Image 1 (cartoon, rainbow, N blue to C red):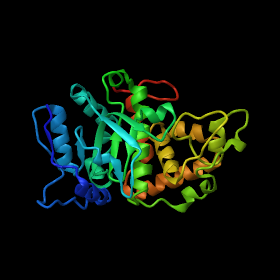
Image 2 (image 1 turned 60 degrees about the vertical axis):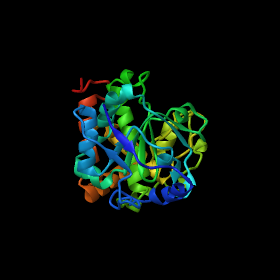
Image 3 (image 1 turned 120 degrees about the vertical axis):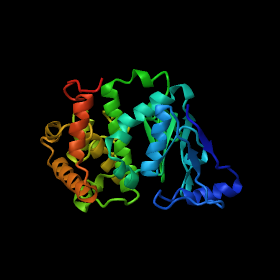
Amino acid sequence: MKTIYNIFTFSAVTAAAAMLAVSCYKEDPIITDKDEPQYVIEDSSDPAQHYLYTFLQDTGVYILSEYNDVDYKWNVYDESNYELTRIDPGIFNEAVEYLRKTLTDVYETGFAAKYFPFKILLAGTIEDTMSYTDDGADMVCGFGRNYIAIGQLRADILPAKDNARILADLGRINGILWGNFIYTNDLISIPESFFSPSRQYYEQNLKSLIVDGDTEAAIRSVGMWFYGEEPDSYYAMAPDAAGDVAGFVEMILTHTEEEMKAEMEGYDILLVKYNALIDAVKDATGIDLQELGDRNVGKFGSLDTGNEGTEE
């Protein structure tokens, strides 16, 4: 079984220090008075715990099932709206397997070492206390300045996730990684040609563009994919710039190139932005997002056609 020693003690003094610490990336390690790491993850004969240990050695990223509220509560200058519950130890192995399928095995460790957040938090539930939707009460993924949190890791829901659900979750989690972490923290540069066609619509209600209740078409017509809670046929709030990036990555990583072309047919702005993002990411990181999408669909099956993948 896992052994993770938390050596971060919360107090009035360390709370202030934590506000500064969250602005650090793993390239700039957090230094304490004794020059000790914030957490120690020990190796083990347990395969899941051994994976956490080797992933830390290879990437510098801590995957944590035990953590303090301060690890996600403070978001640089303000307090996060998230409430996280810890996972049941009995679901630990399944949680790590799910994490590998939806995030860590998607990329090579060299990419994770450079572009992943300092911490990945495993959570039974993630609740956005400022959200009034069902999605906000039980989120698949949350994020902060130096972490990503993976939710819905519970015995009542995790075993029931089939390949289609896992692929959909993979899209959401990686969308957040690219939009709300990599882009937001300026780890790569995305050209203005991606943002300019849609910038005037960011965070705007697109209700006036909806025809015959088709919210999806309204959002696609201005070069964006629906991102966030399920669309309402009478109300459509466009994402911000980070959500725009996240929405594209979510779509690309869950569709083949052929499927993406079909999804973008009739929406010229989507195609322009798609090409701009694919090229920018490839130039900056060497990653071909569409190749990842093709591979993911081959593994987990198609969300569009229902064709099964190779994953048992």
